[in-house]
Length: 315
Image 1 (tube, rainbow, N blue to C red):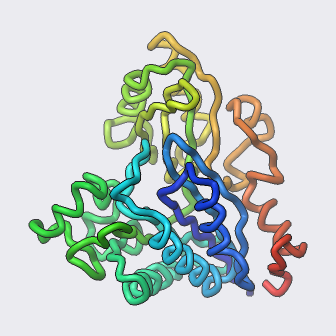
Image 2 (image 1 turned 90 degrees about the vertical axis):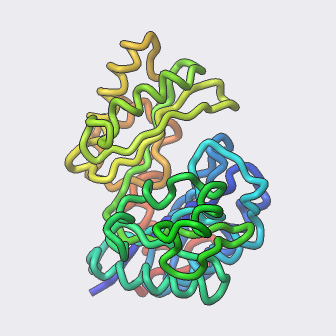
């Protein structure tokens, strides 16, 4: 039986193209692992890379990405709209085929141990890989971001890393390593530069505020585009669909005197998460099945030689 996982390193760099190219190069070129997608955003100052393939090669590719991120990214000089605690902020392992989420837990734990052993970057475990129940939710791990956390770990035993530390790496911070179900990172851009509207909508719709189930949301300002954005993670799209989220945000935007400009999917999305007419209905930017559907991208990599010479025909 073939065994396939996804790993989605989130790098705290979305502006410097040479650095982004170097980060992607670091996770490329390993037989049995392939880069399926890259999404970079200058306002968030973040790049999300989607890796997929066999568990061991994918894990090694991710670890090489951690090393390159530590070399290139200094959080003391990094600013962006997206919360972060590390040069690689989060490193989730996700089952695709022939692997369960329970199988991903030891992969995540091994990756965490290797991150500390190779790079002396402390690690927090979250979601199914969490060692402490209060750390299952990523937001509890990331609370306060790098600037607060680097002080908190020195005075508060409840905030010390699970591996390494207690001090964070002076420039690379820490990494949150997890095992989780498939998550859809989904953003809705509003036809207004007023970020207070996006923040208000985010508070209304997120689960923690009594809104939609399985939705995490923040409001951010897209300075380069002159728009406000409701930036979301949909942690169970089978319970709360992308279309349902879009409809609720559209109604709330109208109540606040604006409309939806467009929406976007960060990374890849499972085929069953979108209906046949959803791309048009959701006003998705830069969307095509060949580029954004997980199964399609994976099949392309499995059945064809990739430009950098990786072959997944043996998977």
